[in-house]
Image (tube, rainbow over the protein chains, first blue to last red):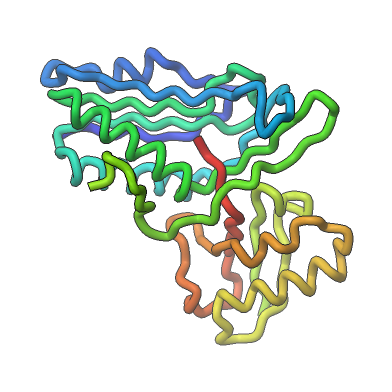
Length: 159
Length: 85
């Protein structure tokens, strides 16, 4: 049985750590470890971004991560090791907002699982971002209406 | 009866918690109407009032169904459109 780790890190106290994610999913039965790393990019819809503040409803966000991780194991194998950590607080451009790690005996399941997890989080986890622009304005990202069940994607990983 | 509404994201500017007066036996979906009245009264310049229509409601462990019946002292969180990742 694979292991699952989910958490929200307040970045002023605990910055996200790529090696922590990689170490969690690197285990002897696994021949494939995938890390997805989400970062703050400098341009959004033509506006120059300086930083993003992430607001998170922590208990429900962690619950949603756990539920998504369990679904992922149901779909692609209960031997998958899954690590999901999201940042809370203000991050400058280049800062890491999310790390998703998947460890699997084989690469196909690892790739599919990693993609599934990030797409589900984007539609189901209670997280919001306030973008801070070069001109001094700040604006909440429009986001997408919460999906109350599994988010269905017309893509090759949705089976 | 009073219920406590926690806010996140675009609703944060209304305050972290809003106390709403609701009638006993009302469904959670009726919070939308009460919240609109509250905003028009206390925050008339609030620009994101339309987001109420695309928001859901939750407690700390799950998203609540629209038919959920409110009870005195409930702590409910409003979940506007999300943007994680």
